[in-house]
Structure formats: C-alpha cells, structure tokens
Amino acid sequence: MSLREPKSINDIRTAIRELSTRADLARREGRNADAAELDQRVRHYRDELSTRP
Image 1 (tube, helix red, strand yellow):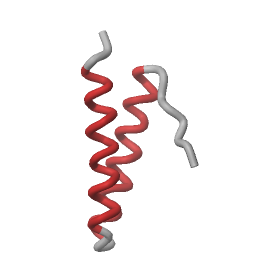
Image 2 (spheres, one colour; image 1 turned 120 degrees about the horizontal axis):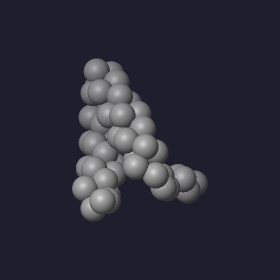
Image 3 (tube, one colour; image 1 turned 180 degrees about the horizontal axis):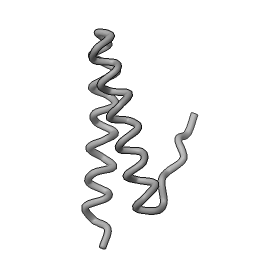
Image 4 (tube, one colour; image 1 turned 90 degrees about the horizontal axis):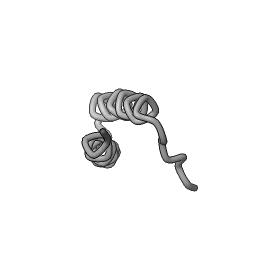
C-alpha cells in the first residue's frame, strides 16, 4: 500500500499533526513500535518541510 505524498506545505503540516496524534495514541495504548514508526514519518515530513521556501 502506498501513502499519498503531501504536495503543499499545508498538506505536510496536516500530515505531521495527524501522525503526531496517532503516535501519542499508540504510546498511550502501549504500542511502542507503532509509535516509533509514526514518529519516524513525522521526522521525515518535518525534514521535508524544512527544505521548502
């Protein structure tokens, strides 16, 4: 399954917000591996956002 890559800055910010919320929920439920994967995706999107003008 392929995730849709966000194109606009707004899409990236929305993805970061959504994934961060899901990671917090995963941590609360004790799903640390899932939380770590989601945190990695958030870092990727933040890196991508930092390269944008």
